Image (tube, rainbow, N blue to C red; front, top):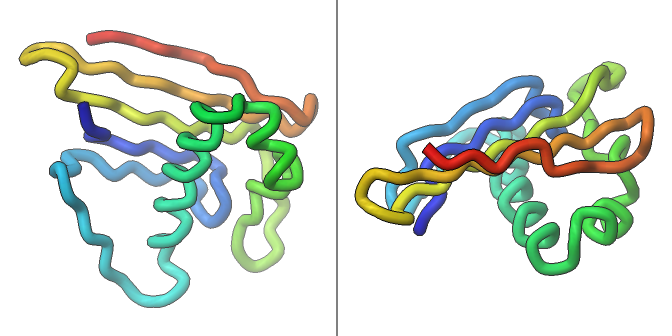
Length: 116
């Protein structure tokens, strides 16, 4: 099983970013400040949630608002969504896992786990 697609909304420097068609090994190249580390950080957060649970992972990072640091002092708005699509479960099946982080409640929740 591998991650094929990452979709980030209001996650740190990304308002709405999608990377899809990821091969088994990916290399991200770009200028400083373009979001390479932020993309990898979303994968670390997924791993922390899977290992420790969403609430402890959020606490370790300073809460929901600390994950919504948009550039140039912009105010974050709305929920933060992280979606990960996994492929390789079987020849014709994939799984999409979506997390929603709600700043109003300072908490997160699993929104969808959908098999295709």
